[in-house]
Length: 545
Length: 67
Image (cartoon, chains in turn red, blue):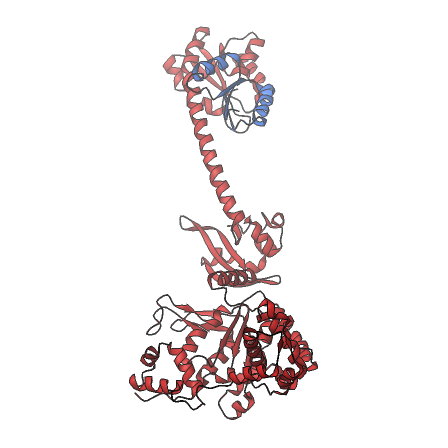
């Protein structure tokens, strides 16, 4: 500017400075310094420049100082003009400033892109509003959960489009709202609402939420991944052998039960295939791809069964794993829990199981964390459970909870027509390839048909397996069948023998261990639960310590 | 394409800019244009991907400067 004014002074002392307001502000001070009469002409519109130039010279200016346009107009009117030019320093300065801006914009774009990616690919729905309640963020998951198009809400007040969320309330209350369950349309969402503050003052709010149904799916998938794959049902209705009307009716009823979700009580003598039916029902049900967890209530002492069913946290009791253990109820989440020999369930455990069924929640031993569970319970018994209820050995309330759907499996002796198909199926399944065409003589078959089958299908299966393993003929004769059936008779506790019976051995071990079952089990080389099971089976009473 | 362009209002300023920037900031694109010709040039540069255009005077009603 000074350079331009210095040049202008050669044309005369009266100088008209024609420029935009910022250029002429504070310029008056240069007049006395340079000994010139400086008059400012402020431009507010570039199309008025010509009129201003003419006005300046009309008012006695000797020379004009201005930009390129002012210079052109002066030249046209043959008036002297000095053009204000940017020097190298200001051009370099402007370039450096431009580079800083470009760099800042670039960093801003990276940040914005990162932010956008996080929002777009977050597994949660994200909705954010500014202090005027207007929606500024509405990510794709939010669109999918609420079934509202982003364009419909973006920039609009949230209470107009998604009033259920009540996010704007935070701007008034100043309080975050966490872990809320809100119904949006037909689905429930789990929502966290947090206030956005800038230097302590609220400037907006953000809500993050998930479809609860989705959370449950993930949970099931996590449980499936973390816990072993052993809890699977392998049998289907096709595996149930028999052409009798009784077994066909059972299959038909069971198939109907599979379509429902109520508890089932399966009754039937030992070996009638209660678990096979339970697995088939599970596989045919909507829970078929979820776990099938089976446990025999008679197989374990009450305390161990409790920890197996409910699980425990690390160090919950002496001998508990430090890592803790999930219970079978927890593992069965989404699937089916099969409780065999339910009549043998300890009375105190019955009430705990009842509570689980009623509340659909489970708590590991030693934990205060409640886990919601969704399981279908199928129970089985070879006893008359109603008699157990009458005898106060089984809780009536649990009985009625379990006995919603009832399936009774007939014993094999009541359906002799199924014996031959069973024999064929077991040969196919168990016999070595050469023996699969094994035939049975008529008298041999008569033996099978005349037998009462106290062990039912399981007993028949064992005998067929045994015959298939030892028979060297093409035809199985009556003698071999009888021999194999005799071998199946229980011999250990009931036959006279000069050797100690298993019950005697257990009694001796208990005496040696002064009644301590853990030590007795060690002496016998078996686990404590096996000892307990054998004691129960053989009727050995626990010795006093 | 350069990210920054310097749009000079006349040849003389273009030469000044060239002398000032060609060695130290060769990545800056130098162009010349005044009034509507300058606006057209700026639009073309923006279309071609230039992110920021340095001009001696901002467009009317944005920032003060000198015509």
